Amino acid sequence: MGKTDREVIVPNQLYKSIVVLSTAFSILSIVIGFILLDTATQRATSPFSQIDPLLALVGLSSIGIGTVVYAFTSRFKTQGMTITKGKED
Image (cartoon, rainbow, N blue to C red):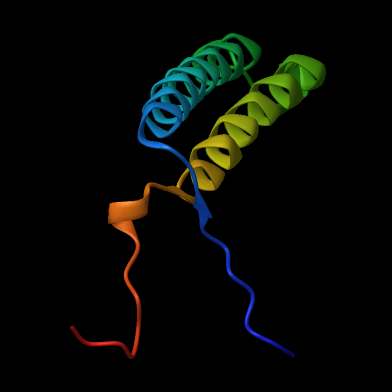
C-alpha cells in the first residue's frame, strides 16, 4: 500500500471561504441535532417507550453530519501551511 496524500492545497481566499462556511454549517447542524434530540426525548425525562424514534434518529444524523463536515474540512490547506517531512532547509 502506497502513501496517500490527504491534504488538498487550495488558494488562500478559497481556504478562508471553506473554513468559514463549513464551520458555520457544522455548528448549526450540531446545534439543530441536539435540539431535535432534546425534543425527541422531552429533555431526557421520557421513558424509553415514549421517545420519538424518528425525531431522535434525525437529530443524531444531524449531529453526525456536522461532525463529518468539520472533520473533512481539516484536509484543506494553503501553500504555506504544508509541512514537508524529511526535507530540511
